[in-house]
Image (cartoon, rainbow, N blue to C red; front, side):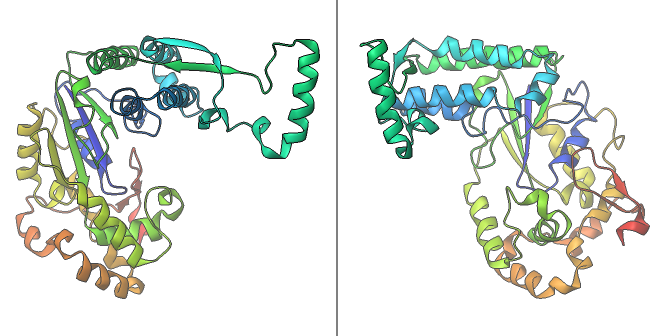
Length: 359
């Protein structure tokens, strides 16, 4: 079984992962890594769409070239390190298995052929002179030079099978046992968490949500630089509300998807752990060895620590009322004594900030 944990951004995915690490035989990347191979731009999902759902000569060539560029990109170093340097080789073998034919050519309609500096209109005079010069050397020469072009005619069944093999190679090289559960962060996209499930014999997606008031404070005050890529954090509460609501417009109803409220891990710990156990079908072998609700409770209702944002918090309460967590009601369900140990820093591998520094 493969379990993908995805958050909306500072919504508590790392807390859920800490809890799941307590389950029997759970495997995960350590040090931490976000496994976005399926969902990231120019990844497997985009490749599948181009080769199967939107197949066209130029579309296919563009998608294949972008996938090649993606696995050669610097961020691939993380997976390369976890697979003993085999990730790029596996990726090349995978894309090669999907290519039906390749040749040298060029298309003025293909964005991949028009993105180099040599194709710039500013170099028109240079290109004209270079073209004439190349003809003097070889009358059959082409300027600008041709590039390799690709086409694929694989069926969807073939693509799914080869993608399965590709992912399994990565997992084995990462030291995972395919017969035991594997947990990956950001495996499935929150907008479509069932996409890609057919690459595994069994999969589960957990989407972690959080009270929008805390999300607003964390992204605008606590970690503005880190959150800029995935959450509006310019202080505009109106923009934040529109974005938050838009993200939540793609909720799906599927038995393989579980929507988890971060706060429920704390205020309704026993009940929520029981639901997660039933959802993944695994034994909770080491309770509270990694995730401690009595500590994490200090990382809830963070918005109350910023009285200068009271007007913006009221705006969120008025416009996102259905997403607010009922703290007063849930507090009656707490089955532990909170410990004043400070708050977490909200990044993977949470470190505890001492209470004296947090205040």
